[in-house]
Image (cartoon, rainbow, N blue to C red):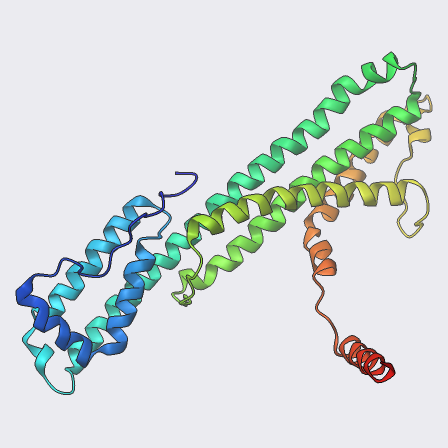
Length: 300
């Protein structure tokens, strides 16, 4: 399911319908293993927020059978608690945590895939619509484009489109790196937010990242094509391509290859833009702000 399993309107407690003959055993379980019992209660609630419906049902059944196995074990009444039974509980709890973390990873990947797909479709439309209909629209308003103008616009659209592909690759590589701790079993017990909400937020994030890659690639294209930055030598200009001669075709190939590479690198570094916007406040800035606030308070 794209949206994930529907939200449980009436969440249940662990062993809410426990048989009367197991009530005393349940009280003993809370007494002997209080931390593990509370963790199982939390896991049961987290299992009801799982992204996939089958995962919800499987984890609920697993936790129910786990608790019933412990309640029916005669070592439950050993004081201060049987060590082997405690180890069994710890192993099963770790297994449930791992399955919940994997379910959250599925929600993250699915949300990002949908967001990146939507962003890719939007980028494709931004690339194709101006190329197919732009000249006709400009003709309707009596605007003519010469050879240099056509090649400049084509370069901008292609550079932006390849930049969106670079942003997609950047996001996918970071997602893969974030999944490596899960594959090694070093999962973290942090599932406060429902995976379905995480999936929806990352769906929007995927669209934003693709559009940021598009905009960064366009910004780099305009910055370099205007000649303000002379660090990089362009292999071909629009004037050289439009010039008649046998070298026009080779110049056009170099033009496309150069701007595709520039667009891809600009889109691949879309994380740099978010890093600049979310840059943490340095210690010097904090100290200066504190001094300014102290000065204002003294003046008042």
